[in-house]
Image 1 (cartoon, rainbow, N blue to C red):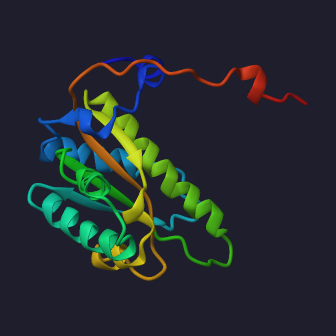
Image 2: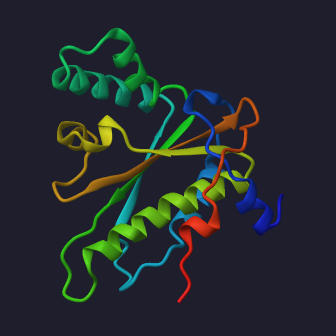
Length: 187
């Protein structure tokens, strides 16, 4: 297992089609979710929850996404429809991180949303630490209210991300990262 700094330096986001079996087992999934939940949470509101999509549920979710995608995009090509389905069928595990941010007298909704984003990133790092690959996406299903309703989200809930997890089929090449002198200001 890489040490923490090496882990952070080597994390990559494999393409979703490059994430295959095996996926995390139940013990690993429990570890992943426990680590995802260890994020800053001002006020201890737990402003997020997790939706685990694995096994046969992947096909059911792909079916509902296809139905709503076709309704929203009647002009969509077969390739576009297949792409929407693929996001929920090729990886052994998808975890939806659901933001439950809501008005609060002391904790701004923005902080609650950031906590949900931190849960996504912890999940991505935990998957990498366990030897899996992970890709954090949103896409059509994350923004279509009919999909969100069909997935059981309450009206105020949103998808912070779908984290696709599996075993990378190939090493991911390093991509160019921003030069620090372009993104750092010192006072």
